[in-house]
Image (cartoon, rainbow, N blue to C red; front, side, top):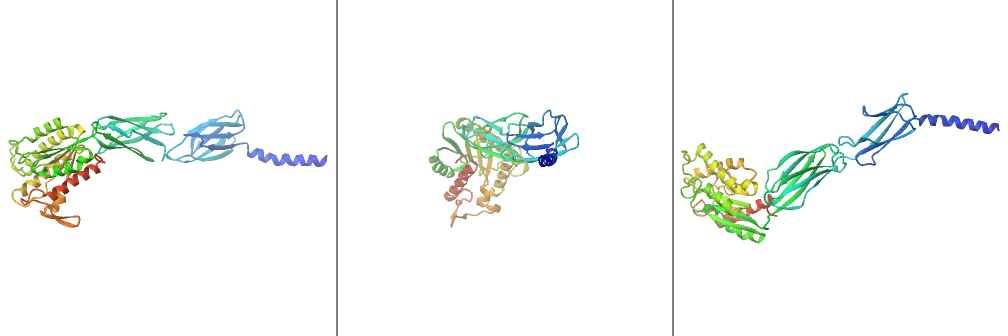
Length: 398
């Protein structure tokens, strides 16, 4: 009996420290998406404060020795390792730590894969955590650009933000949603409702031959190429053809998805009291060209590729061509949504130096005609290839 009593006494003495150690305990887990759960073991009736990094999470007076705080706090993007400290009113404290997911996969971007051109495209930025209170940068890049961005926000407690844009012209549109922790991308293909793109190749005699190669190469790819070459015309000589009026007429009747323009070899005539080729003349030419660009752009439904003039061999052309190119650059600078300049001047005459031949592939090829102005058949073929490459680079063609 004495031995049994002694053994029981020793057991009680050994158990006493263990009970004291377990009087306050805290554990944490992140099993429920979006939330940290805390499990508190404490003495009933003794107030307990739980903090994280010096910030209070909660304060409670347990009515039982086991308390579950199911949604004690939310997951955060700026902190994955979460450390919590529970402090009882008697000064005893304990800690618990848990790792929550990063925000690298928090959001999801949804958008249709294909739409008819001109359609309104509805996009959703979805919060997988279902917490909301997330700001994103929402960007849309049309075929050829430029990218337009705006702020989109998933409201506190909401699941998604709903955005939309109008896929005005055919081609591949890119959609992005960005946060400091994640970048999401989707592609939306806008198909021509008739299933066939319309390309207008127009200008003066400079567009000839190029238009033939465009028809030859793009026809089998489902592109209808319309050619309208107006020989000897120019923007600065409306008495022969008023290009501003003609551009509006073409845009209305043909409704081109793409316009390829090559014009200016016959320019240099005085405009608005300004002789060629000073700043005033360049400003007036840019004003007229900008109106044409706007007409062909059709409010964002069309894409315009305006070819710059390669340097000529000599004569008055040497003054006119740089002035025309300067005016076109000025006009296009304020029409980036609709217009891209194709710098044939840099391809055929780098540095403004005329050359009749250039190396294409492994051969030297004659790229200018005998007049020192027009492109040869080989030069026109190269120019058409550059246009088609640009159409593909800008996702208008696949």
